[in-house]
Length: 114
Length: 114
Image 1 (cartoon, helix red, strand yellow):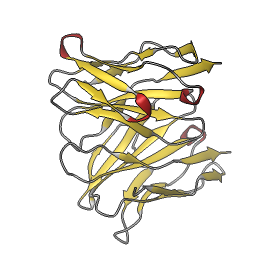
Image 2 (cartoon, chains in turn purple, red):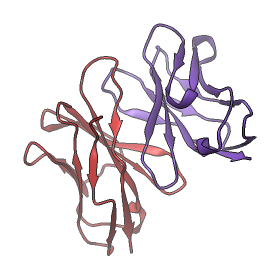
Image 3 (cartoon, rainbow over the protein chains, first blue to last red):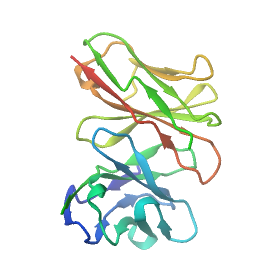
Image 4 (cartoon, each protein chain N blue to C red):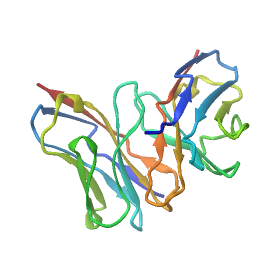
């Protein structure tokens, strides 16, 4: 069965520092990959997605993610974090086809200190 | 940008009562989903719906749950006899069916069972 692992439950960074959130998936073929962000009490906002092609994808709010097939990873990065980036970040996989259900990781809570 | 709209934003219900959560999909979307997120946990798939029938359901989606799109507009999730453990945030998502497009999520309905 497909699964998504986000090894870091909680990450704290200083404002202006760089950020990398890890995501590993378990699936035989190349899945559809997503990162969503959730602010407290809010819904899920799509940051970026990977379907095929260039393995480095750009998203909103200055985020990017790189798909590495050899490592089954899709890590999220941002060169300089802003205080408003504090939120919960979820990696998700859609495995079998374009309209397949999404399987989410357990999330990483990002805290940003001034 | 078109949005998925969910109502109500918060529902408080006595255990054993029936609840109906409503979702208005983006107008040209054809695939519909319900997910839930128990407080502090990851987002879990419940059910997907296409062409007026269930495409897939998870083991969470037992006989007390049902979905329908009664008027061609609203997509509803009904929980027949609520239990304490049904307390969660419920997210509706929709998909156009076009390749290389993501699911769009609503802001969720927070269901509290007393």
